[in-house]
Image (cartoon, rainbow, N blue to C red; front, top):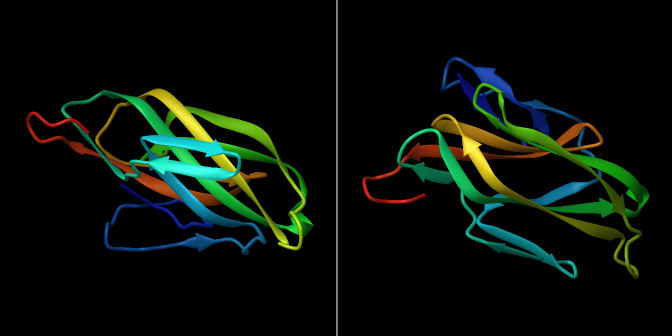
Length: 165
């Protein structure tokens, strides 16, 4: 079965790889500007630094332990969304099984500086020692107050002989 994602939708499981179905939700005011997997991510005083953005990892065999996986997001909020929210990051395989326990944390949406009208919240998840059990498509999914807001695929493929992913 293959898993599809919509930036603002629920995952849909399909048995036919050529059939595309997206279930979307009403668009929130908040916008996801960046949501990626990478080798390194940091937030330095509001500046989001990303190094080695990828969607595919090569593995010589399974299971494989990825020493450092970063998931980063840049979320933009309108002034009407100021206040406390909860974010949840999940990492799952193509069948929806968790690769690691969900990460949940509170965030505070600040009032926009000056006359901007919008404020930005950068999120960096540094995940050490992530163990992938199977080849194929995996997904990092981000939810805000229980509603999905972003998804990015992470594919595990066989690495060429002598190469590392």
